[in-house]
Amino acid sequence: MFTGIVEQIGVVASFIRTQNSAKLVVSAGKYFDDLKPGDSVAVNGACLTATQCRRGFAEFDVSNETIKRSALIDLKISDKVNLEKALPIGGRLGGHLVTGHIDGTAEVRNRTKNGEGFDLWLSIPSDLLRYLVAKGSIAVDGASLTVADFRDSLLKVTVIPHTSRHTTLTSKAVGDRVNIEVDLISKYIEKHLMGEPRGVSDEMMMRLGIMPLGGNDNN
Image (cartoon, rainbow, N blue to C red; front, side, top):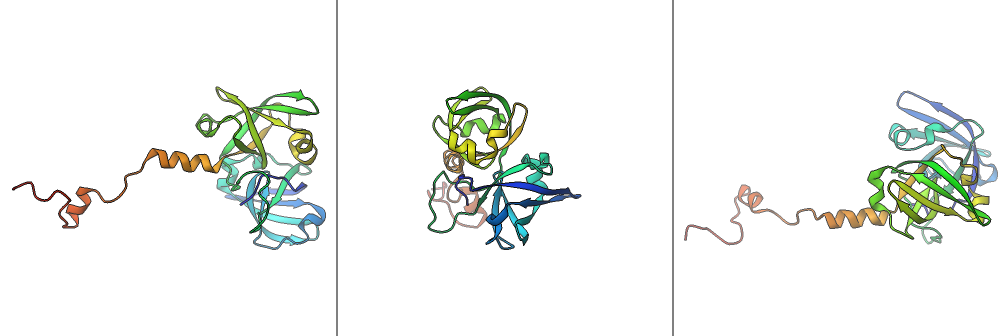
């Protein structure tokens, strides 16, 4: 689990695509000093497991599912990426609950200056729009942001100066793709409201040889 508070900007040292997966090597200086194989790191919001760790570098296996759902496939050597280590038990939740499981990608459609920060208008998949609420949370390339506005298939987020200085969002231009993870809580609410059948149906009880409540209708 993560918080969406980017801790470090890393640099892609290598990205090699294999038949069903990929290997990603990221350089991040001393940030990886305490990282061990098996540890989880959110790379541009995607939860990846470190397979090898050496001085200043970490290697990650990227599954085919992650490649299909995320914008990691767009990475090139020397590209910068947002990094966040998994939230420790008792750690401070500074952003919102982020799983690192990417829901899809969004394309930057517009970028406008907003004071010392800027606004991004993102075109996101229509099936994700139902999870958005005004002033709700969303993770964009792993950064926890607030939904400022949304209409049709466009989402607006405001990037404040601090976030601009400490994430890769400052380098995003029109046409770039970013990873999107919607608020986990909204998914659980949707699942609950959809109302799956509860308990055991009369038909199932009869198959098990149990008389359903209400008894026999042949009285």
